Image 1: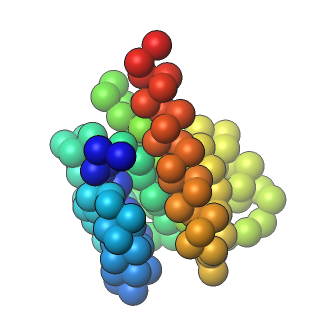
Image 2: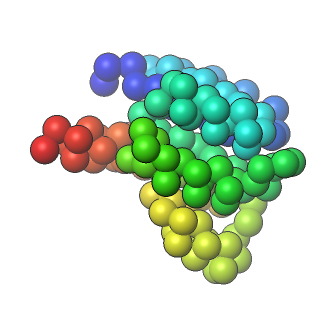
Length: 130
């Protein structure tokens, strides 16, 4: 692991702090944003290896951010994990329609999230190499 960079976009400070601490303990560099607009700007400027994205945020919501990331020239291949309280089937379907790579509902199991983070980063690096 070469200290991959993860962008966490969530408006709940306690969620951001917990993810940052736990991901850094697993040797990831973590950058954060507390709203969609800031998160999108950081995704475009930092080009992280993976994004963890909430849906319910003030201003630009997670669906809008996801759509802009997945249609952006330099950000379209960045894996995105949706991490949200929204658990209805139509919410999940909407996220996958906008090309989310994975969907986890809060409260979440960190081990499951970490496993998926590792898998998606590895798969993405392998796809870029070929």
